[in-house]
Amino acid sequence: MNDLFKENTDHKEKYILVAVASGNEEAAWDSLDELADLLDTAGGETVMQTVQNLAHPDRSTYIGKGKAAELRESIEIHEADGIICDDELTASQMRNLSELTGAKVIDRTTLILDIFAAHARTREGKLQVEIAQQKYRYARLRGMGEALSRLGAGIGTRGPGETKLETDRRVIQKRIKILSDDIEAMKKARDTARKKRSANAVPTAAIVGYTNAGKSTLLNRLTGSDVLSEDKLFATLDPTTRAAVLPDGQQLLFTDTVGFINKLPHNLVDAFRSTLEEAGYADIIVHVIDASDPQAEMHRRVVYDTLIDLGITDKPVITVWNKADLVDEDALFRDFSADASVKISAKTGAGLDGFYDELARILRDSRVYVDTMIPYKNTAVVAEIRKTGQLLSEEYEEEGIHIKAYVPRALAAKRELEWKN
Ligand SMILES: Nc1nc2c(ncn2[C@@H]2O[C@H](COP(=O)(O)OP(=O)(O)OP(=O)(O)O)[C@@H](O)[C@H]2O)c(=O)[nH]1
Ligand SMILES: [Mg+2]
Image (cartoon, rainbow, N blue to C red; front, side, top):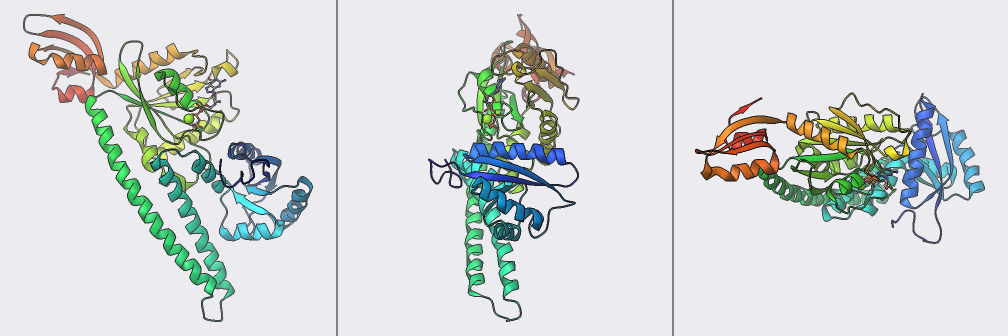
């Protein structure tokens, strides 16, 4: 599936996972469990996990030198292929730690980038992953260049190694520029597609949430589609939009998006910014949380933090506590940051009625009430309202159709319908 861990398909590469805890040791262990899930998704195997308490990661070796020496032994005992650190490392931390442990050293960012690379399907997704990878490499090369120039300090000349690095850096920079231009062009195409959609005035809901929360399963359940969903992290990278008709007959578009994760590498956030920002154009945010996950509360916070980071703060949010089939029937789940909270199982379909009710209520709130007469020459407006709003009544009278309806603000403005709030 990917380069790092599946060079030899018969052999699952084994890794020791390491984290530095500065204060909250429990959180560090939890984060390591997630790192193990990431490794599993990438096709590798965890043979040991360890946490070191340090005020802050060591600047040159991440963990302390004594701990590194211990790890060297553990690597032998477990016949591990290397270690994976739960933070992003600098080039020199990586090199030094590799020397001290005598093994391959990988960081959390590389692992996530690797999974993204393996899961990207569309051209845009692939470009976005590559740009994040190139930026990561670029930063690393710079780090190595500094180390090399320190080695050569005092002689007054630049070593051949550095010259090579300089050209590598220029090549990478050029590549990043080309990729950025390509992505920019695709963003324009998407903007056009979105404008077309919004001209139709069908409201949209963006499904967001922590990775593996069940976003794609929910999209499939709501729209009868067949988007890949599996028990892997970051199964979905590319936004998919599908239409659904709610029980009250109104149409709604749902967009499934890339999942969030704690310590999401910022190069990835930047590279995927235009994809992630899709949620910013939605009328409603559907925030899916895996209610059965012991880390649900942390996941909830990470999702809100990421939304804020993306500038998405003024949308109505409906929080969906998913996987209800895996939790105690009486367990209560609340999200006071959301406009509504419901408990469902995307898998079994339990609780969907409540979800539809809340969705309809929020949609109604984002609309205006219209009580007006539509002349017979404008009956297309009535069809439009039926599609995008909620038509409460229509009476055929002499001078036209008398309608009472909830209509999206945008449509009311476009058609110059008189409204009351
Ligand atoms: N038991 C149970 N499992 C569920 C439910 N909803 C989703 N799952 C499972 O959870 C796993 C992840 O589901 P996905 O729909 O792929 O999750 P996602 O949020 O799209 O994940 P990414 O795209 O990887 O970020 C799959 O194995 C689903 O079958 C549910 O309501 N109950
Ligand atoms: Mg998905």
